[in-house]
Image (cartoon, rainbow, N blue to C red):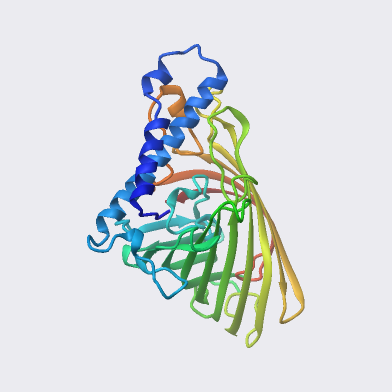
Length: 401
């Protein structure tokens, strides 16, 4: 969050000092109780989070004009705050399965259990056929397209804190050779505008944050035959109290840990000029409204009593989508289940096993890294990008960044 007031920075520094737990105190007493051990891990996790936040505030304060402090940069005659580029110098880049796995452009640590993109290639020498199957969402926001505002809870109980714009590419489907008329695919190109809203907490106690995403796009297929024009809007709320949108690792061992659920409202109008390799109808309009609900968890979270090959490496996802087409009075739905095994074994805010075993530093929620997983999937329903119906099991190697 981009609070730039000097008093806020000082307060965070004091909290950081008070919550820091020396590594020696964590590792020296091997016989400490599970409750004390979990509390130490929880404090170290909070310490890492606060370090990242203080660093952000320091960078932003340095970038503020010396004769106009950020704390006094509020507009005197407008409700919205004066905007400035975020001080984050890095480009935020993601390679994920779909846009639901990259819900916040500006905060890469929001989903440490995010699902990666999948690619598969088949060469049938007997049938003399080849096929490529892809599901991948690629997006990135350069620093010039990342912004923070000077809004605060003093102005409004719900205020715009930051926003960003990121071009994206979404690929989903199969490309076969020789060509088969049953082949279905979608290649979507657009720009995602993301707006992050924060709440004061006392006025809206249940929800601490909400993100609104607006994405105009052009869609074709893997052969370039289709021409579809649309816009997609997503709205998602976050609440630590309800375990909605994200979760915090409490440092305690759980068979089912880092559990949370998501509810994403969506509106998607589109015009189909040429259906191409999809099940849409050329010359027709569609207006989908609906929602996606997900439940996510990590198996054997923080359980150092199990082998390291199992501790926090298996994640489960269940998802259901329902959409009503206002233009044609029809409905579509899709059920998706997925189990992933993390091949990298890196420590993340969702996987503290290595840190617990060695007493090493808890990873902060920021930063990005390359990961790979084995994924078992089941789908039953209709893909909204192509209107292709399916009921299938799958096994894939996925890659995420």
